[in-house]
Amino acid sequence: MIDAAFKALSQMFSRPFRAVLLKSAGLGLVLIVLFGIALDRLLVALTDLAQRWAAGALGPSSETPLAFLAKVLSIAAALGIVAGSVMLMPAVTALVASFFADDIADEVERSYYPADPGGMPLPLGLALIKGIETALLAAAVYLVALPFLLFAGFGTLIFFFATAFLLGRQYFDLAAIRFHPPADAKRLRQAYQGRIFLAGMIVALFVSIPIVNLATPLFGMALMVHVHKGLGGRSGIRRAG
Image (cartoon, rainbow, N blue to C red; front, side, top):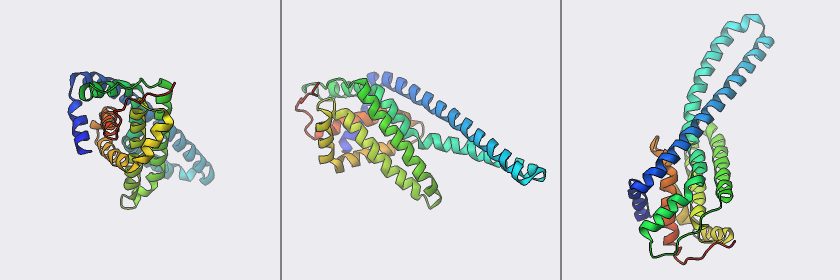
């Protein structure tokens, strides 16, 4: 596992990976900005609605304290947008990985396993379904873990382990489905779920590092290609259909 992680890290500095990194990081930044704008608009609308409701319920004398409270809430919302953008990076990178999984896997297989049969390109629809599914689950985990952040960081642990599970599952599936039918890839993942979860923890650590986490699709996919090969994924079994 450690060897696979070092191989994935070392290849990120190669020339072919740099081109993919620029594209994936650019797309990740665009998605984060769009998310931030959408969240900002939502929080502003909710704050304004709550202020008008409270003013109507409490009367004119409440305008000054309500204006102060709205100001405090707007500052808290701004901080929340920044924190939310960081916490939702697993969701963003999971979606980004759907577009570049084949480019990354092809380069890893060509560099480290040239004698093995190459994997079949993933249908974009299937890769997107995997990415959207993982992104939505990661966002849901963030919302569930958020209240627990107040309890000595308990929410952070929930988020970390859930992220490890989700990203480990997604990246392994993307690597394995290049060689196996989806049902066989799922059975392989279930048979080695402990090892894949450990690999997912490495990806979860990577995605928790600001700025560096924009490269998570490259690192996560490269790591899982090595993990899949280590589990016997050299057989050249091709995906049906």
